Length: 184
Image (tube, rainbow, N blue to C red; front, side, top):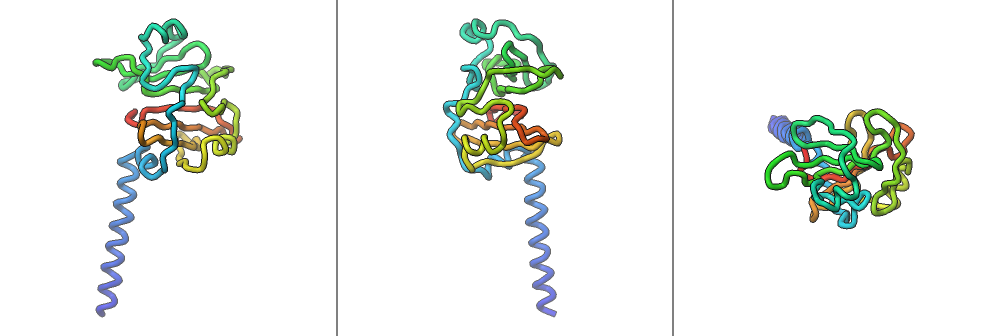
């Protein structure tokens, strides 16, 4: 009889632990992966000499990219498409208005296939394979799926930044995102 109570107690604790981990995963979202992945140095990352927290109103940025080709409506950030295949998400208002919190290189711009010369600091471009990414960035990565797409990501805990490689069905990189970890 005592053994039944012990087994019941252990089962309840185990179910509670599993439930807590599951709830934590769903409430933490992307940050769950960040916390459980070793840090990778992303301090040299930029796309087309644009870095996280650069400002789209900075004269250097304006001289290089001019005016945006288009803007996507979003409640949290201003998403802009720029010449050369760059997409940015920037803060909408306040003292940091225009600061870039996400940089995107993709093979599609507003549904149209584009060609871009943009690459990561470690020379990864659209069309490289998952194996190319891991060979360049190392084995301290996380895997996740969003919108049915497999993603390989790296986090820099010190800089509070991530770089994610979105993989097409053929296993090749179709989009690259450099994000501030606070982006929603």
